[in-house]
Amino acid sequence: MIGTLRMARWNRPGALPFTDDEVRFVEGCAEIAGTAIRRARLHSDLERAYLDMVLTLARTVDARDRHTSNHSEVIARRAVRLARAFGCADEEVRDIEWAARLHDIGKLSVPDSILQKPGPLSEAEWEIMRQHPVVGSEILVPVERMAHVAGLVRSHQERWDGTGYPDGLRGDNIPLGARILAVVDAYSAILEDRAYARARTAGEALEELRRCGGTQFDPAIVDAFCRMLTRDDAEAATADAAKPDSGAETPAPAPRTTGSPAYVPRVRRALPALTDLAKRLLRPLDLPMVLDEILRQIQEVFGYPLCDVFFIDEETRELHVMAQRGFATSVAPWRFPIGERGIVGWVARHKRAYYAPDVVLDPYYVAASPDTRSDAAFPLIVDDRIIGVLNVESPAVDAFPKENREVLEAFAILAGLAILRAQRDDDLTRLALTDGLTGLANRRALWEALEREIARGEREHRPVTVLVIEVDHFKYCNDVLGHLEGDRILRVIADTLRANSRAMDMVARFGGDEFVILLADTDAATACQIAERVRARVAELIFARAAQMTVSIGLATMPQDGATGEALIEAADQRMYEAKRAGGNCVGAA
Image (cartoon, rainbow, N blue to C red; front, side):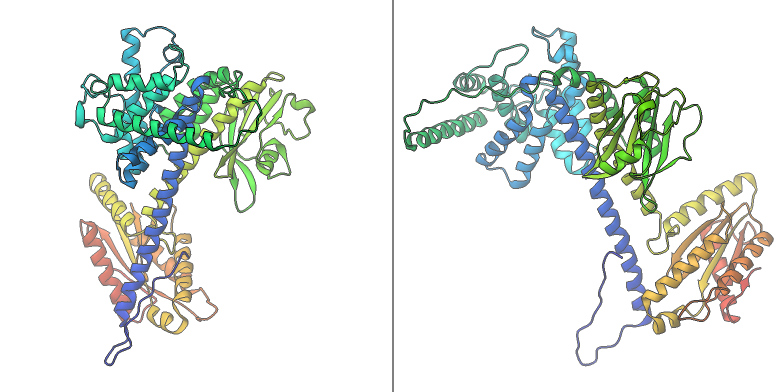
C-alpha cells in the first residue's frame, strides 16, 4: 500500500450516499493511480541512476588530465554566476550548470594521443576532436530532463562568427547557455596548464576574451563576464585591506592541486574499458545483456578469464549467481549467506572490496574452479545500498596488483549503476503490463496477448479460447467485510487461478472482480476441463470471515464463437452471466 484516495460529498440537505457504481469506479481509479505513482517513482529512480552514470563518466574525463582534474566543477560555478548576472531564469541556470559539469563528457571518444598531444592537431585528429560535442549530446539525450542540456553540450564549441563546430551556428542562433559556457570554458582553459600551452594570468585571460569578442564569443557575454570578474577582484582587494596586519610574513601561495601522478596512468589504463562499457550500457539494454556485457569486458579488456556477478536475495539474505563466464562447470546453484561464507559473502556484508592473492591460503575462499589461484571481489553499490558483488578470478598467483584492483573498483561502480538502470527499466516494463493488486497481467497486457494469439491461430489454423471469470456475490463481501478484506480475497482467488492454469496460459485481471484466462492452442473441450478445475479449487477456499467464495465462468473459442478478441470476450462474458443467473458456481459453455 502506498497511500489512499479519499472521496467525499458535502454534508448538505438532499445529499445522497454514493452508489455502488460510483464506489466501484473510484476503486478502479485508485488502482490506476497506484500503478501510475509506482511507475513515476521507478522512472525517477531510473533517471537518477542514469545521471549517476553520466556524472561518473564526466569525472573520469576530467581525471584523464592531472592539470584539469576539477575543470568542470570550476566552470560550473562561474557559469552559474554569469547566467544569473545575465538574467537567466532559475530553470535555465540549472540547465547551464548541468551543461558545464557535463560539457566534456563526449571526450570519452577522443584518444589520449589526441587530448594530450603537445603540438598542433592534424586535420584527421581535428575531425575526431570535433565529434566530442555530438557524442556528449548523444549520451545525454536518453534522459528526458537532460534534453535542453544535451543541446547546450552540442553547441558549446560553436563560434559567434559561424566558424565553430559541429553545426556552424552563428550569432544568436547559438543557444544562450552555450554562448555563456563557451566564454567560461575558454577563460578556465587559459588559466590552466595544458599539454599544448602553459597557463597564463587572469589579466591575460581577460584580454584574450576581449580580443575574441565578436568573432569567437558573444561580445555582450564577454563584457558581462569581465565586469563580474573585475568586481570580484575589487571586492577581494577591499576585504584584504580591511584585515588587520599581524606583522607576520605573507605566506607564499599554495601550489595548485593537480592530483596524484600515480593516478594518471591508472585512469588512462581504465579509460578504454570504461568508455567502451559506457557506450553500450548507456543505451537501453535488458538485464541479461547488461550482465553479459560487464563480464565480456572483464575477460576481453581486463584479461581475467573467470568472472561472475552475484545478486542478493532480499528474502533469504543470500547471494546467488546471476551471470558467469569462464567456469568449466556451472556455479549458478551456489548460494552464499551474507557475511557467513565465501569471499563474496564477506564483501556483501562489509561493502568493501576483498583481495585474496593466493586462494590456497585464504580462509574465506570457496573453490569454484580448480584453476583459480587469486581472487578479487568488488561490491556493486548504488546510493549506499549494495545490490550485488562482482567476482573476478585468475589462474595466476597475485594476479591483481593494486593499480588493477583500483581500476576494477571504478569499473564496478559503473557496472552497479548500469545494473540498477536495467532493473528499473525491466520494472517499468513489467509494471506497465501488471495489475497492481493481484500481480496478474492487466487489461492492456491481455488485449496485446489476445491479439497475438488470434493472429497466430488464424495463420496456423489453431483454436484460441478465453475464460471470463467473475466472483459471485462480491458486492456483499465488500459491503459486509470491507474493501481491505475484499482485496485480500481477490488476491487469494488470483493466486488460485494462476496455480490451476497451465504454464502456457495467461491469467489476467480484467477489472474489479472479473478475471480472464487466455488459453492458446486449446479447444473448447479441453478449456472446459480447465474451467471446471479452476471453479472447483476456488469453491474449496475457506476464508476466515467468509465461509465460501465461488466464481461463475463463461467460455468462448475461436473460430466458432468469433474471429476477434472483442467477439470472444463478449461471447464468454455473455455465458458467464448466464452461469451467474443459473445460481453461480458453474461454467457456461456453448
